[in-house]
Length: 159
Length: 159
Length: 159
Image 1: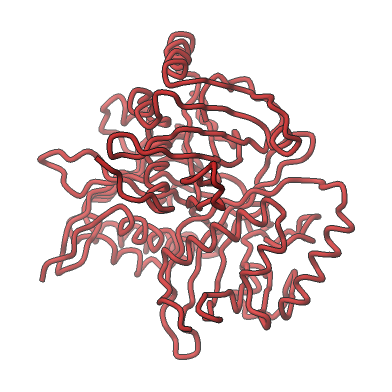
Image 2 (image 1 turned 180 degrees about the vertical axis):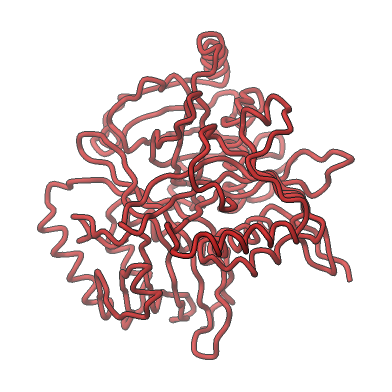
């Protein structure tokens, strides 16, 4: 079964799921957006520009990402904050032979504490490669490139 | 006259109107987005999760919403702030027999004071049900679910 | 060669390029979005409402915009901050005989300092007129209407 071609609107709609599931803490649904052998990384704009392989978070495969989320739910039992993603529309990145179906999108991530204060947590962009799996498109590589070099305390959570 | 099927893009476009009209304080245009017997509520994420019927604002029908806006314009004659909505793309909520055409979308709402300070006012999500009326889609229920439990002073305004 | 009709989705996709190129400081690509005789202005909501012709920045043509960016890159050699644009979906403005293909879109612009602090810099809206040039759509007029009356220090940069 082959997947219909992926365009910027289709990516934007999948990112709307991505954000809504993270914000609802529905990690099982969120994991379903990735390929089994995905590569998920959070890195900084400075490291990205300098070509450094340093990552603030790196999960090599969907299973490792699932482990990470399981431990997060255990540790963070009392839900110290609520996340909220607001993203701009995705755009296709220039085609390279090695990277078809590459897109990027900007995001702003807010956190609200249980005391009721909402604040900006992180801004940056998603750089993605999508791959067709059984007729649907899945995230094969996801690099979250945060503009903020400061590592906030709760970077335990995916962005 | 029957309306063309509603999809996430169509909802996103209508929400762009929703935000632009609130930000321009064009309340008459904004009211035109709702059905006559609409249900408009602002509630908190905590109340929503706990299943509590408490609302920060509740307007039962377009006429009540219009009354609210009329009194707001009278009280708030000197325009104490400017609002600005930035929303992410809408997504369809899982179909339930009782709720077709249900969508959600995340938002960030900023306020700028007349002194020129822009700040984050509220983040959260819209949970909507749309209904076809005379060949166009109208908001039949709108639940604004704010992440912030603190009730800011100016929640007199719709979000 | 005639351009395909422009709709809100097409504008949103071009604005995604607009924001991504500014954020990546790829000014050459960004300039390519404008017509040769474009009019680029940054003004405030107050001036806009009062019908005042005052602008915080005004570039009369693509060449002047290019000059501005060249001097910016020279002065601002050490890259004092990173910008990040997150925009809502565009919407078509009511047609007037004099202004077809007029659209608007809300934006939030964040800045991250080299010390790693991300903060809200400006919110407002883009009011645009697009014109077909050689089969593609270009920005002929761009009015950036900032909600914030305070002029931040780094308004040297386009928004």
